[in-house]
Length: 174
Image (cartoon, rainbow, N blue to C red):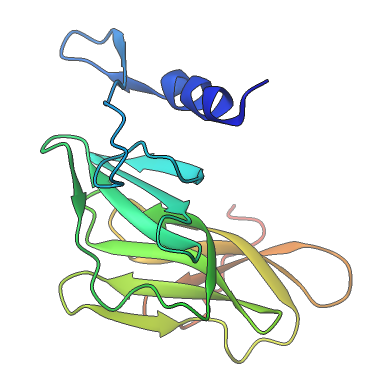
């Protein structure tokens, strides 16, 4: 099956709730110049949150994080986020699109990166962890980040606040 066709099918399977509660499909034109959602490059790991769609793409020769605003139908500028020496994957955004988290690999080491669009700064949340990290997600308000962590072959879920502090979640809330 054609790779682009697979991506289009996947994106078409992402449903949004319409005004009357019925689903509607995302449909955006193809832009050969790479200035829209769909392009000649590989678009990977799409995640939708509120009006924003975040994904990774290799449009500029490295795998970077992009954000698309489904209301304005434009890419959102993310200054200071991407770099040529980093491979980005598995992005997620807060509901208002202010915060983005993703996995970034440099020199074979993966970390969870938190980006604040208002101040245009990134923060490595997991630089002090010994072990592997992957698959971050962020709460709707951007206050908590959950991700997978392994330092002994077993994958566990850790939850951090957006300042990089580990949160202790009770095992038995009763």
